[in-house]
Length: 165
Image (cartoon, rainbow, N blue to C red; front, side, top):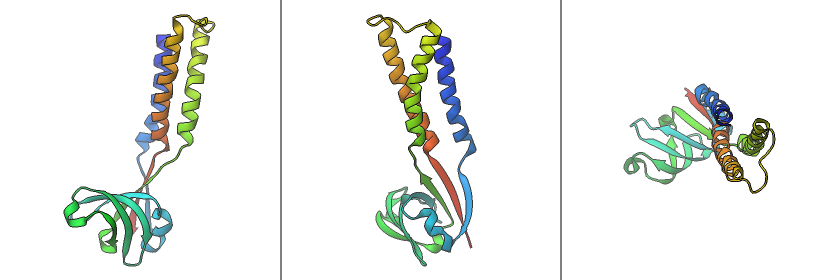
């Protein structure tokens, strides 16, 4: 059973590696086409002075990017809350998109696969009340936690958008 547990852990882990290895998608957009790609989404970017800012884009205006700032590496020059970031200060934007599909699929599938693998390896599930019940319960909960984290990593997508001048 230990080989089986290790194999299942490796399979779940290997599913996350391609998502990490491929890195963010990259796009190059003119200012006029930026709106649909970023409005209503969480972004992060680096200002010309090196200050990193994060927040939600409220609107793309002709003079700049209106956003609600949630974090900054240096609050003094930028400030928090709703701000308009000048158009000249925006060169590359990292858009973060979340999802739920892989979290739901992996979290539901992991305990089924684990119990099925244990049954296949043991020939049958342990009798009710046997010492294996606690181990199976812990394995199910652990597999669900690992699968949820793996699904979260697969669901997170980042896109780097370079502003074409």
